[in-house]
Length: 260
Image (cartoon, rainbow, N blue to C red):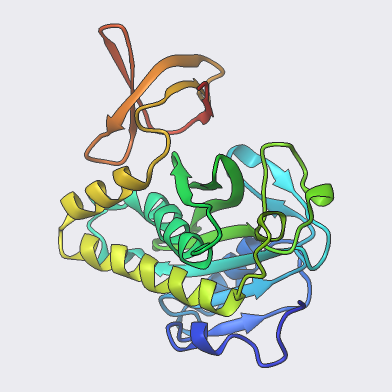
């Protein structure tokens, strides 16, 4: 189904601004530019959405595209000023966890379940259904734009890699409005907990959803080195702790592969 003519009324019940565009290169780039030009016009939880993103960006400067109408690209404005600086590293993880819960709710009755691959990819039974990228707005360090690309109506033939999946590939005709509304509510709930200093609850909830914890992993770090071992836990800042023998490595950023 295409973008509904009625828009997204359930999402609009949560967000102060839901803007739908027919096509764009990057929803994140659009929202970052819009916030820089008119901060007051894009308050907390404002949302830009399209089902035709031509030059999406992911973590580690990756780019990705999807056939028009097969994936939903959304970018949300987050007022990070409400979150203590030392807790802001949890924001991208909170977005992944909120999306995993929203996806899982839409999968009810279909025998599949959603989890998070650290730091914030959303997996369904091991296949990636959503990727997330969080960016601080230049010149506005208290504003973060969180972008997500969700494979909605992508057929198995359209999936870019064998490790990807989609709602359609699972056999689910997803209600995108409910998905977005659930995601926004979940994200705001995590942010509210952080604003109150309840990082322990956020830590606990995200770690429970994290498919990486407890797995043997190989992590490619930004400097080109690789860490291999068992993902033991998330630390107090949301970083991944990988143990190799008696040596523990704390990973703040990296590309994780689940070995088994």
